[in-house]
Image (cartoon, rainbow, N blue to C red; front, side, top):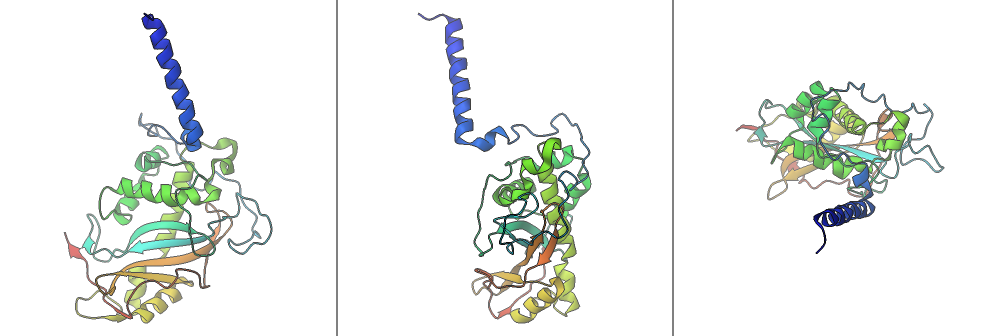
Length: 293
């Protein structure tokens, strides 16, 4: 019979072998955080968007470049970014009847198709803990007000949005942060930029300013809503509706290119047509008031 020591050694060898094999099958597992950052309640202050090198002011705009560009200063291949908002049926805890909420910031390919769950940046599941670790309490509070899950937890929604979409943005790669990189800086930068753009796009104000306010009885011209929001943002807006007849306004997607990196670049309103830009709403839509839970 083999000795207990040799059995333990064999078991340890098998465990290490399987761990190594797992990393070969999933290379991201070696760079993705395996435990929540800040689990010991430590805080490492980070000035958002400061971790990557500055990019040239005259750099190309995403989806408009025909020559090679610095991969850390040019978003490729997902160069068309959509800032997507929800008009939910119910008022969220801590919210108000006037809140459009944030769905996500999505990098579409330049032809209107998209990738998802990519490997350009590490995957994270612990979004709240990561933001807390980097002293982003104010951002986290704002996200809990305006970036709300309709089902499940907010943290689950944020992890889903980050892992599905942010990992397809090449300028969030750890290599773009240089020697000063620590895991989670890209998480802070993605959510900071997404939320800052969202706050610039007050959909409720833009519609109200055009005389379009939530009402149980009225219907509104889809063309007028779209023209209002496109004049407001300066670029294309895709509208999505729910309901049996697709006549209940539910989402607004604002379309941008980026000049530079996600972290430090300028969002440039996209005005061109592309695959999937026609929405799904009827010609006349309802814009319903929110209900209290």
